[in-house]
Amino acid sequence: MPLQLRQQLKLTQQLVMTPQLQQAIKLLQLSRLELSETVQEEMEQNPVLEEDINTPDSNHESLQDLTAESGELAAVGDKTSEVNLESDSGLKEINWADYENEYEGRSSSMPRNDELPSRLDILTKKTNLADHLGWQLKFRDVNDEEMRVGRFIIGNLNREGFLEVNDAEIAKATGGSDVVVQKMLAMIQDMDPSGVGARDIQESLLLQLTHLNLSESIASELVRDNLLFLETKNYAAIVKATRHPLKDILAAIEVIKALNPHPGRLYSDEEPHYIIPDVYVQKVDDEYVILLNDDGLPRLKISRFYSDILKGKKNIPGMAKDTKTYIQEKLKSAMWLIKSIQQRQRTIYRVVESLLKFQHDFFENGPDYLKPLILRDVAEDIEMHESTISRVTTNKFVHTPQGIYELKYFFNSSIARTDGEGALGSKSIKVKMKRMIQAENPLKPLSDMAIAKAFAGDSIRIARRTIAKYREQLGILPSKYRRAPKLK
Image (cartoon, rainbow, N blue to C red; front, top):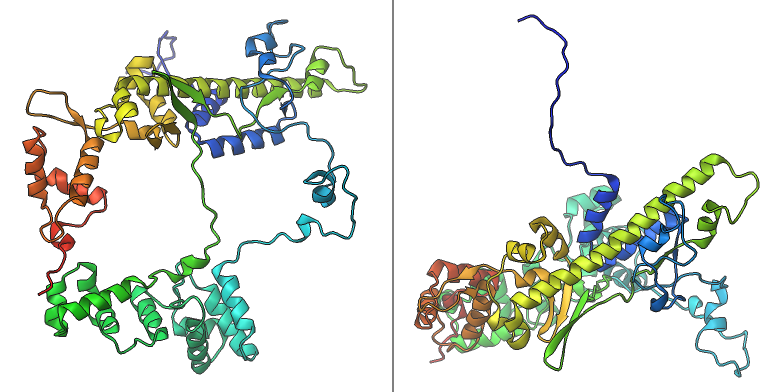
């Protein structure tokens, strides 16, 4: 067939992801902390964006008002355009070196004393494990070679306090002799916290028992020779292997329980991350009220300075045409960001409103009444795509009368009933199962089959293997490991 050129008309559909659409999707799935950081980065890069806390909510203006004067985005209204978020803005010039003395906690009638130290002069960081051990090492009588080896060992401890290199690697990296390496390792293992510098949990527990003068005790014997039986609570095998009375073994186990298997965590410098709800659901009289949490999030506005430049109200001599074009592009970007954040907040509100409708019994009575729910149910209810619902419910938390939960918590699979009643949610089954195990007889713990039969008695059809899966997800051991030992 000969090659030839010809024109052909073809109609196709394709999804075009513009940068603005990509940004909107990204903002939708961000957590509160990530959203705050993203907005802060955008404000650093976009001079048209500003923060404002001085304008009352009643004076907030919609994005439509921004473009009312012209069809182009360059025509910005006189008033401030804001998203309904809060933060700090327009900070005055502050002398940060003297912030504490000038601005904080000082009455106007109190005389100033310049000899008082500033708070910034006494700020300290949280002591971590390396700092704590290094501080102890300074008070030991060691030479330069030993100090070098000791610091290398401390620097190679992980957050659990375990050593991640062997003796040969220490000697090769520091140039120290084997004798010095052994001496410094023993010295660090003798430091506080007890058990630090070990290679694994077993060695750490043995070091802690040695510091308690229990190196020849039954507890040390159990850790050294029967750790696997301890992990599985196989007391019969321990009695058979050690030939000690069960009463003495149980007393030794109580000593072992008091030890710290991860000594390095006592000096962890990691800061806790507290969950801040994105939404509050409160019951007022007989109705539930949904409140979006805007605290700590930036409240944005368009800079009046740049909007006046685009409208010709402010003339800057020598301004190039490219500069005005640059400002217009930044204005478009700023307005799209504000619009995307507003849309994000509205979508979260609608999703929570739908969840409140589907899971009303949960808000009234707790997790036992959680109903089966999938993403498609909420998507059809608010006429959005399932992927949008998935993004909205990721890393978003709601404060309810029953506690704080991630939005994804309300979605769970269905467990059928045999009496014709409505199906139950899998998470409500987990709650019932956990409560059932907590109330069991320790001498006769419930097996997976016994739990399945108990549910069958309540007209809940659930397989034994499903019970086992739920038990593992809850971190509950099998019945043979939950059984308490019988004292004869």
